Image 1: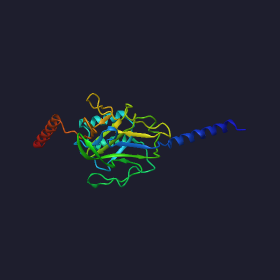
Image 2: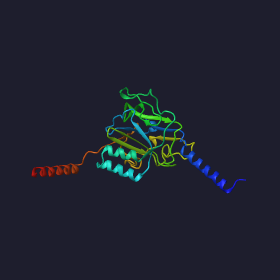
Image 3: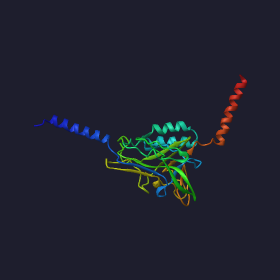
Image 4: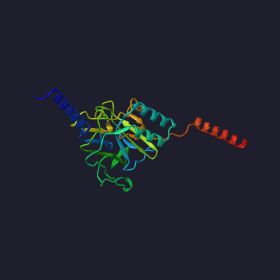
Length: 261
């Protein structure tokens, strides 16, 4: 007959095993779609140019939302540089996990003949897509693909908002789909059997003609009557007139001090 101590030990081991299994949970398949499918928008540069194939897409969640909002405000106000903003975003972000099977194919190419090198742990721009944007047919660098058997850490938590963001040539864009429209809200899985699809068609890019900043957190939107809309990355803002005057004043003060020496 088992003693009380033995029973407690068995229960403790069962709890530890359950915790260990939870930490190695599977999100199943994670799919991202940003190629205009379903009438969804596409990511472009601030000047509506192509983002290079191979540019990484971060898929996961931000740990501290207050810090995220502060980072975005500092960047858009011009008080934080691109490199400082990128460092803050990276330090505050948890990727959904690493994949067992590669995302994308090495045969995929883009404008200029650039090829995409698939990765087992990273998403990225990987497709050359023919789209008609605002009535003009053309080819655009986009992303579309899946990773299967993706591991995710419980440190992210279940049913947490997921984000897709990218950085390219001193420009940054961050989006999420939290309103539960389109393909449904982007959230972390709550069970091993859950699959995750992050389709840009679900992002609410406008509300009454105004960009929905709860879903397009960083970036600007260009809407068209037909074809996919554009989510433009946010460039480092130009210094304001007031800031330039202040810089000039500081320079004059420094010059006067040098003359007095």
